Image (tube, rainbow, N blue to C red; front, side):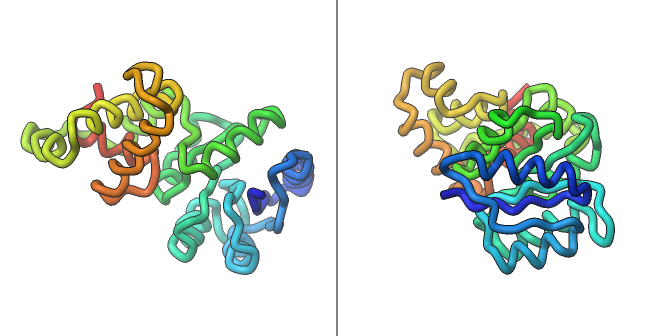
Length: 215
């Protein structure tokens, strides 16, 4: 059962998220919060697997709340909910450690899929969002020396998988592209994370762009 904490200062939006989550057979809402400060306290009290995090809230915004929650609970995943896909606050939240974001007008099925995705350690990021994220976070191109060091850190297969992750492909899509079993791809992703000391797929994307492994 995936334990979910719903955080939003708008009661109606929060109630909709709670109803959507509780309708899923493999999920349960273990807490609610209307402010960032309450979210941090509820996360410590309920220890959720996934936090649905609003950005603009009183007392403490979703960015700081995300940072504080993940600082205390490394196994928790944060899925940011936002009104605009171009909101720079979203990118700041990703830098704080969030595993992705979803628009608030997403369907019930899209929300459920996104929760399951971040719970298993994957990221919820569209290719267009990835491009904007990279543009915002990485204004300078990597130097050749960094690429050499990057390529030395991973095997050829791991580098190939990292490049495909940076393109926004999921494990099943990568498996089809490189003719491997999906479980094998998952193993490669795990090794990449371990070798590079990264948290999740979002950080693999950032690492790949920083080191010149993605266009």
